[in-house]
Image (cartoon, rainbow over the protein chains, first blue to last red):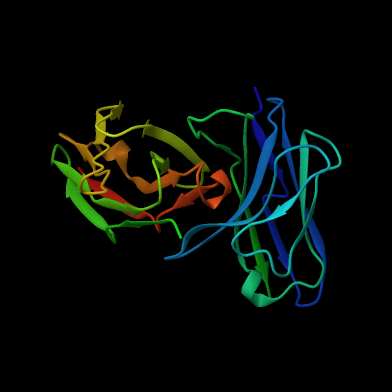
Length: 114
Length: 114
């Protein structure tokens, strides 16, 4: 029972490089989210999606793009990485219409931008 | 906008000590409240929740009561164990605001010594 799977788990980039983080969920959830976690800042929402083909901006969207071409996948892209994007990134999903609010999280992807 | 404030850590306790982690919130309407826990090297997972005033959420010996009059949702455990060492996040979900997205506090790191 995989749940939410993120790849890669670790990555080191140089400033200006691009990369994509992949999130895959096998629970048939409608909603998917990308958060970043920084020391002393908690989790901040980058982008989210309420269904296949839809995306929306969260609290800190600048410098990131996302796509949800398939229901089970949510991709987070960095077109030109900056040191300020060094962080741990978490993907999460939840079912549609569920008002209990539980999100299911992946194990995180640690990104370092030099 | 909606927000969550929780006590800053780190909190260090001896095994079998009593734990309280304070959490207060600001939100319009009637949000649902949550505690998530993050064990070292893992993603977040739901610990407990409460969806209306005076509800008590409980799980694994942890409890929290939704107090609308004080806008609080403090986490308590009567006797902590070493295995409770983790980062604890208070969160709210407000379907009347913030587009229904989870809003997290900054997290409180708990270390329990044997």
